Image (cartoon, rainbow, N blue to C red; front, side, top):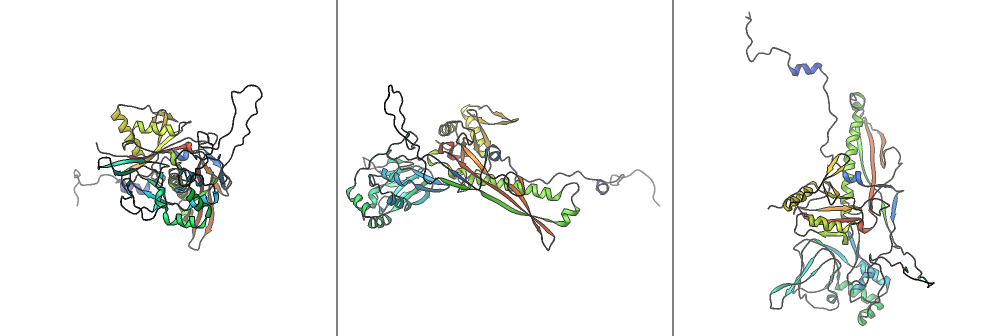
Length: 465
């Protein structure tokens, strides 16, 4: 027999929330996904419809006669412009285009990091080295016998054509990298093989004649003859605008996956949320994250690999300073649209501004207060990689087809399209009652002319004071 009395602290006096939930309807959130980012690049790029392939036609451009070798890059692959080999004293005056093309194809691309020794004093000198990108110090013996920097070489410089002309000779200096970069090398054995195969080249090497100069405008493009300031009826110069004979073509890349949903889930568990739609929504988010990553990092069309070599600069001291951002603006000075940087890079730039007592005014973009520099907004992008040495890059670009800027490429109107260039195709139901959908996203991007994109490289973040 129980005796009524005051309940103790450990006695339940009402229905518990655990039991009550059995009769209640909970309020649910849609499935969340941590990997979703702001994807500013996808929002800010103007997208151009492409029928499968985009051909980028440019004016013919070369810079023969400036004493420096010019390179072009297709993604991460770097090649020397064959006619530019005439900048080397050895090939000046040689005009056999076919042989120059073969010669240019024999150069081998090599990457180096800051501090790497490219050639060591005293070792056998058996190759010619062209510096495509980066800075290299030639270190040798000074006037008083001490070690000193004889010369600093950078983009377009070279050493040493004499090495492939002589046998059993040795390097008289050490070449050490100041920054990361790329070189193209031609071995003495490869050069001698080519000389033996082509009598015209052999005769040229023996004669070592001077090369005639070609005319260019200030941008290195084939010059357009124009007369101005004349009076009367002089004979006007005739001209034409020359184009690149082999323009680059961009095929649309694709990101794809197969979404699988069990029929039991699709039939019975669609209230209050449609399971198939939620699965599809998260799949599309993942594909778009991959799309932005590829637009930044892909070796064929990614922006980090498609910036012209002359449009890449290094920081002065390491961290991203206001001076560095000004230098980057000097590369893309015609209607710059926006900077793109890793969030940690933006924070590092803010630290440098605070250190200098500079407080840039943010800009308003659709209600978002975005940091800026010189009125150009700086948008975050976590797809820009940070190396193990805690260095990264900052991109600055001009955008738009009419502005000859950076553009995104897509194909509208594909079958089963749910968004431009994004389709979801039903693939059927298998014997395990699994419904399959093929989700495809087609895209690419192009830098229409070189000065539309500039990159600040070797940007250090998180440096301790």
